[in-house]
Image (cartoon, rainbow, N blue to C red):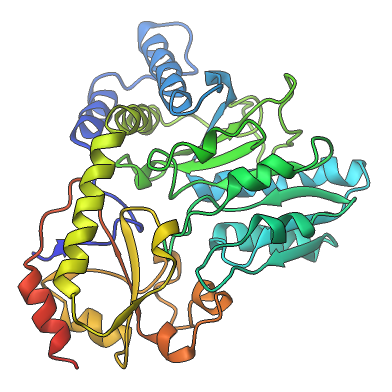
Length: 377
């Protein structure tokens, strides 16, 4: 078996998470909405505990601010499309976002644009970072939503969401961040009290697939004025109807708790692994796509000069499992919209591969990795 180096697509499941999922699947399988027996009560308590665990990763977030969803994609859709009625009622027509967002932002924003809303897409610099000054200069009097990702899924570049939050107007503009790649890993920036809406995903933090949350931070005791985009049941403060998947929610809660508890040691392991990547590739002709000073410790996007990414991945098959971009668009051979927005050359984009690991990643046979790449040169 090859060593898995595609953790930005999905992570392995934490052993403690697997245990709690099994418990609430096989034994405590009640519906958290059932109030007439102990099975329902135990399920309800499990959901409440998970809310507290998810909220505990942040400063100043109450468990009631956590809305469970099927994942960051749904959370993003709720944050964006759920704002449109309020915006219309208040004469607001403008959204600011970036050109390097995940498709889970770009597509709902494009849908809003098709309804007549205006959208400004702010480009990054050549390091893959969208500057705070460029984001803020795009905000207008009729802007109602600014959506900026926390960590880019393709390059690992950390975006200056805290700097944007520092300078946004306090009234009339809501700030959302897609934190699927940063929640539980890069903690500090997400604690800024001006960030109103935060999307997270379970399967990016060693939890199960199919579960996530939208965190609705209150400012002056008020949450962002969202309206539901689905109907039927009234669960999750009326914003996300449907029977709650208790095993998945409990799993997300444990994963979040583990992220907070073991954050420092996990980050240290990731940094050490990155140094071993650089050591293994020393002397080969490649470029890092992104400024190393602004990258998370568990992601590298590399372009090997003169090599096609498909050829590199084929050469490494059976040694390491890697990707050349987002899993959501991996069936497409179109150039990466992220690397294109960075202004990289066509050859550099075509040669780009992404390595992403975690604290559980096994050590590859680096000599074989190097030999496989050298065989193509």
